[in-house]
Figure 1: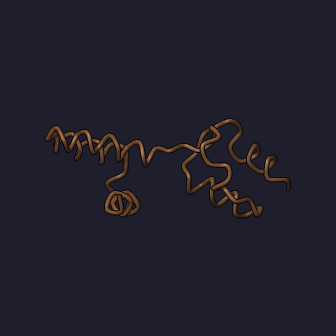
Figure 2: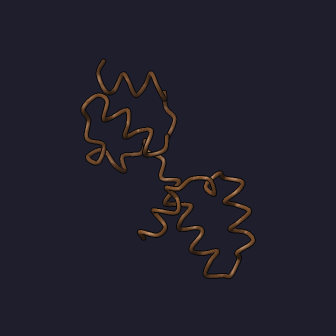
Length: 86
């Protein structure tokens, strides 16, 4: 199946998280890094990290805990690894 058809079959027009897109791209031999920022990859993790930096700067720790719980990032090790790396 062509990469474009696999994408449309799996996601239609939806934006998806990077890891899901990477797995699909890898399965058909596509280098996703060459397709980055062309409008179909959701950058939610980076956006959330940026938002958390703003909350941290303003001392809003309770808001940070609440949002981590609501959005599900509090359970994702990748969130903390990326934050630590940055």
